[in-house]
Image (tube, rainbow, N blue to C red):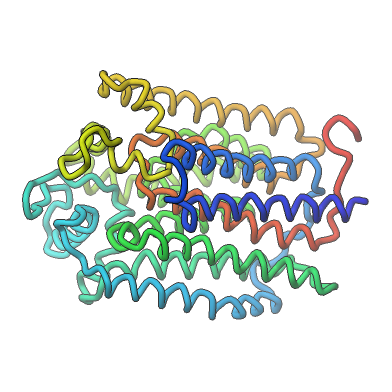
Length: 440
């Protein structure tokens, strides 16, 4: 009976993951502008809930051996899929050359990379064809682009290759705990591996323009490495990868109460303190000393630019039909369109209240996860509490983001890909399906 329950859980995770992927890609523009974001959010929420269910019922795997074993070489089977993804990305590059009239994203990462190479301060005003703006990106968003500036290749290769290498690294590490005793074990693994690559296919294929003007696969790659570090308990890797996540997007900052509690209870205070020391040292060396010492208000300026951008995107653009909903809010992602509709005549208050509500909801999620860990620690699958909790948090964070650009969802969809890979490993293991909390 336990085996049947495990596989039922696995296929439910696959079904809702597919729904989330399709609402991001294949079906993103096929439904009403109010129906689509709601279904997309509910699919993401269901993925997180199914993952959290495993934390109470799926017995925790005892595999804590080396990250790589001989079985890890089977990850090479997924190279054709990644090469296919890279080829698809290359075709998108060729179809959409970088043009600063289309987007200011690459201007904001290439300019500071050039300034650093020439010994100048990175946070200056960026000159664009029709306006000037302050650089809004944190260091780990633009530091990797020193390489394409120096070696003169298309900078869009950086996020694409970073994500491909990171996902292959995670798959390789996961294979060390994989059991392949029957044909359906192989089927589960191949399905999970295919769908993990398929997540980014949905992005590149159905949002080709957004893909070519964005770099969101880079922070998504940081998150893959951070997740692996947390599952393995490496204090130095957790500190470094979390610093990279924080210095690329602020997304995870409100989850830190849970992350700290998780590391403390699972790996001990010594690991937590050393991880925090590495985290603080990394941020100090890469951001505080070189940049914030010259401009202490830099983080506030970065946040301020985001708020002003939201005010612009919540307005109907001149090239749209009169009375149409703002373009970015009506593309089928995020729930900001409902808030904008409610605050139709007071957009400024709508943005302010959405931001406040999002912060409160994300903090409540973090403390709810702390409570869940504390309440169920005697029969807890800690891997799945962490993974399901991260997915739950990101589901809320991005559902209520002020400007729901399609490329932003590369990050939560990457976590879905990781859930599928981890599920394929655990569902074929010897770990059973338990009676659950309160029924030991």
